[in-house]
Image (tube, rainbow, N blue to C red):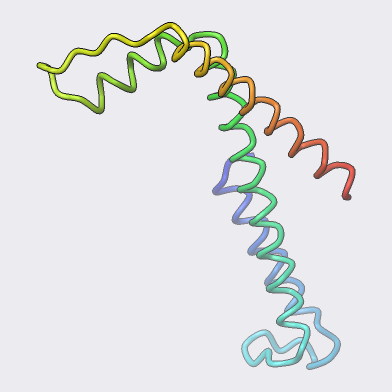
Length: 120
């Protein structure tokens, strides 16, 4: 689901829950009962879960790319962060460390996902 579709469904659910509130008669325009805080907290929690999922995916993809292609990732990063006249030669351990970093990113993304599913 796209982020726009996701946001629309969450906002629609939020508005529907306000309209159905039994504590204040469901007057959505003057909704002031204590349930508003709970509905807003649910909305924020759903948004946090969505962005956490996106962050895990980005972390896993970047980690996998860095794990498989450490030299290209480091060369690309150096190209966009330095000027043309600057040239650098890296020692071989730098690329091994980048590969290890990529592996750590993949592990963290999957560990984060595993712990999230066990917690629910």
